[in-house]
Length: 345
Image 1 (cartoon, rainbow, N blue to C red):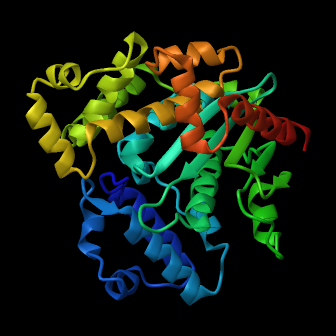
Image 2 (cartoon, rainbow, N blue to C red):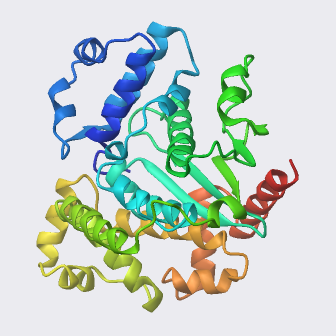
């Protein structure tokens, strides 16, 4: 199944380059070695393909010999690195609101990132997964995101706040000193997802930089940017329509085309230009929503099936097993076991 190439904001790429340069590498040389256009970093609206960013990290690790080089992202803090999203975060009332905005606008920073903000009785957990295109996303890109987020929060609050725990999806490295020095909290490795957890007290405390008027203004800017960004791709528009129509039953191609004010033939051609099809997009949208819904413990499997537009729940069960190789009930049990392990560690 093929989808439009994922991209990363040049602003975030600039932060990565600045962090690598603090490690003694030359950003210009790295870009030249990889055949990348270094001038894109000076254009805040430019986008860089995800696979190029993967090769950049791989090259940096190869030259430095430091697999933990991504942790250096915590040394280069600037709101503009998050593009227009950074100022929205800065004007939020609390860190909780700031994280909620980061999740909402994550695709502006990088299309490959998948974030979810979960609430427990005593804490808030940000789960993170960065997806690759033809190349798997490197561990360093995840390390960089977690390190930068913590450093950004410390910069916003003026306090050296510490997480309750940080989780990594790879085995524990032999040398943990860089991790321990940065995070100053319990570390968990070989987890299903990358995550960082903060106490409710830290997350719900008022921020000195909070300004509701500015936050709304920055939300408007971020929303307009996201709209401009997404309107260039019919895939994203069609996915939004599918999410809206699915609870009413399986959407027909004509209904989606009408919502986008185009003919079914035009919709089919535009999706084909973006290396997908209506059926593929419908299948992938259902798959992504299924993962989200199964995290909601109060939702029954029957409710999820209907919300995904399946008139017959058995069709949902068959589709889910095709997607994940197991029934939805078993998948939910694994999610709950994973969450319990995180809470107990």
